[in-house]
Image 1: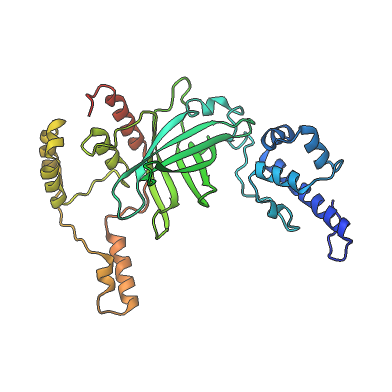
Image 2: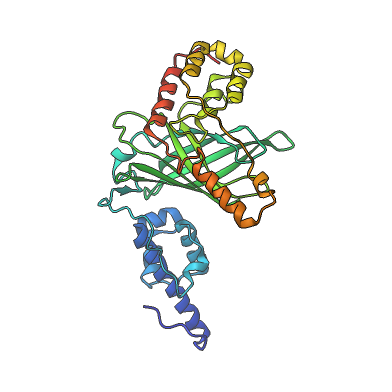
Length: 361
């Protein structure tokens, strides 16, 4: 254990104690994350013998050494110099017993079919925009073999003055929990100071490849007013045609990315809009007949619409308006939560399969 650090210690001893404490903290992190000296050597660029000597106190650590190691461990060097440093104990640990796996080599069967380059699509989170964004998401075993790396290159849909597309770059990792039948992906952009999370269903694919999944995403909205945001995100192998608003791909993706539930509510005005504005698309895929049958099956009811701001502007005291809004929301058609059901994954899979035989949009 390093000696007690006090400001009265001689300068040299004071510095050595801090370095010793930092190295002890690094060892804690390595143990918690299950990182070996060999793996750390590969990631940091230092030799394994150098790392061994540093961690055992046989060689003095320089600031450069410590920063290199911290960069490889993806931690802030400032944190490990803190005497009160504690490795978070709520970190999801992969020990095999709890069904959590971070390394493809741990359980290759769990990762089979998931290590690939995928296309991703989601609605823009800028309220004034109505477009679909496209990115490339790649899962692969890290060079050290310690984890499954994730990389997302997102096309923002905007361009530089010279016409070059503006992209965002995120890196992170993929964790598979067999007990929860889920894939967890955390992605970070150091340039933007932004982190987002993806969760999608996991199932064993054996000798098959993952074709598509609908994921839920927790992030921060783009634009000037950045707020916590949740939305759906489509992960799929084939590249979809989103450049043509009249293509089958574009229509399909837009509908599936909405926060759907098994019950569909649509106003008469919106239904009339489908018949008039989507007439060409309806005739192209022979949907006029099914539309008429749909109308005969629908249960008619009156739906009231109002903007929350209009209630807030009513001439009543604040508490009355807040209580009334809460009551309206309780009895509204909004769901308590939004779940990506097996039906949703099945639907997009069936579309991908049928898409192979469709004529070009």
